Image (cartoon, rainbow, N blue to C red; front, side, top):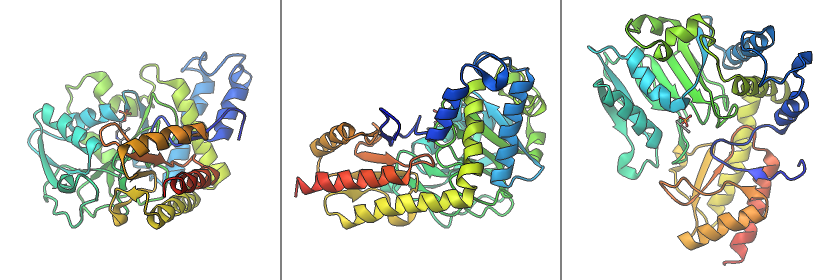
Length: 362
Ligand SMILES: *Cc1c(COP(=O)(O)O)cnc(C)c1O
């Protein structure tokens, strides 16, 4: 590990690949011979054009997106997408299906309802405190889209397989698992992801939109809230978050050139999560909270015998250079977020610490 760095299990903003941080550091004062920092150059320069175009190209290649998909970079986080999606893509005379699998899904539903849009919650796991992903869902044939949250960052659940929607465009909030595994993009009308979990720093949201969705957009939307603005200007209608997009570009390059693509990334993620779940399952001290077949490979949520022990666990872990293990304030407990950039070595160090901590309280 580089000097003074700890193993970072934060949920977001979260760990970035060390080599990406080093590349940023190295080129920070003089970007590509410009004599200026990436934070100082014009977003209208050739230098920045290369950055954003490369980020788009790599996204398309990594996710196997056909020509009919647009890759956009929008500010306002995933949370702004909760509102932009129904505003742009849910016509007033139609209804959309939403699956409620926890906090972020619930917020997406709320933002559609605020606008007076018609929303049907066709499935929910609220009955069991969002500890599972619903199965065998009946969608409405005439739904404008089906909205899901592919990975539930707070509850530690993840769709192992995406639902079959029989031609209804699937929309997914992939904030906490985008680029963690390959999938077939064909059923998707829209995918979005706040960068700060798995692909970059805070400040930008990646939005992938299928061409045919653009026809639904009403004409009277404010410019900055209209997807067409971002599509027709390559996300450069106004000043974009240049530094955040640059970091995303480097992370995508790392995924392709160092990791070797999403199949490889998925195998690594399975290995990391597999080790941690195997350990948790073998312990009588730690207890996982998500139902086994709905478990997330990205956010691993668990409890200790009582809250006092959980506090001591989190504090002692930090003393041992393992940071970010406190669960989300809305649910308590503990959570290890092991996104793409979290190394196998970090997961092994965590398991060692957990064994040690447990042995003192047996
Ligand atoms: C973190 C998170 C969000 C919120 O993202 P912001 O970029 O902070 O708006 C939304 N959805 C999911 C799944 C998340 O993990």
